Image 1 (spheres, rainbow, N blue to C red):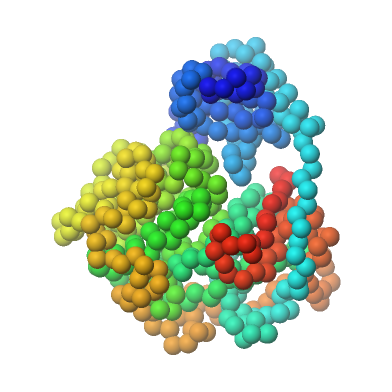
Image 2 (cartoon, one colour):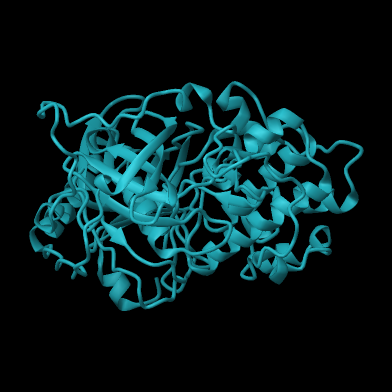
Length: 485
């Protein structure tokens, strides 16, 4: 805020009442609208030499505006962007005239950006053999949901087993999940860590998106904990260390995971952790960087997310605290069926521990579940280093851990690569079918689309066929895309 350029770019500024998205009270914020479309909210008016971070960051590019007089007079709603997610936010002012001024200024900036926007140049796509569903034998259904299904398959050329996730484009678009799906594809393409699930290929047909993933058959940690009720501290330490190692790797590469929960923690056949489902990841998140999107599972949400404040990497360490608490204590640290009550507990209640928990375990969980992110264990610039050096993890050799030299405390009882005992029988008993597109010929093949077709809206440059390398590797495909909402 201390440069003439920033000051001169201001289109309009002033106090607005902003309604909270989750705890629905009204908060007074000082908002600044700039020519580049940024719309930032502060607790108070920042001075020219004030470098305070905004509490709220929006972009009004391609926004939609609506005026209403409920729940307060002189209210307006903006449907706009927060990072890669489209959101609706409600604001209120003192008079109709003031509301009209804000609506006019925001609309003018949005229209100007629309006129001056240049069409991004298309990426160069390396010409490789197109992978298609024809390259795989489908063996067994592993899971099924709103967006599609997951099937165990064998690659014909190599006899290698994979799990292929086949998603319906129409459902993804209808439910506004395009951004999350593209984020998952991007993150999977650019990560390589022993405790993260790996992507082999991604490709698309005319109506489906396909992720060919490594096949992990040791079951969800949620399943194993439900059966055993509680894990020992030693077992929790092993799983916690592998989770911390994987999240630290993501943070080192400026990615925040944002969706840590037991259901997203899998075990491989040897008993090592595999973190799955990267749809809620946020990229370009260095120390001090923040986002504001409300996402995740209610019981695992960090206080700063609930308070509508910008948040950063520390949300992952809160999530780590929640899952490790569940493992050692057999229950969630904060729970109520009523989400409003649950959110209040997360914001104000102190965490309680069973008597049999060691002081080291209590210290770790207390540090991870600190309400203020800057004071949370791992919330500083050192990030994962703070957690690795905690006394609870004193016995962990972190290099040996990543090299998988440490013996897992539990080995799943799978008898073969194709053993699906840890998957729901409701799905594994199903016959394997991939239905043709709606309205298509009954025997229409699900062939891969051409590069020309891949340039169509929503899923440009989706396909990926690459070797596993590090994030810094030169063999990574550029993945820049836009989508329509």
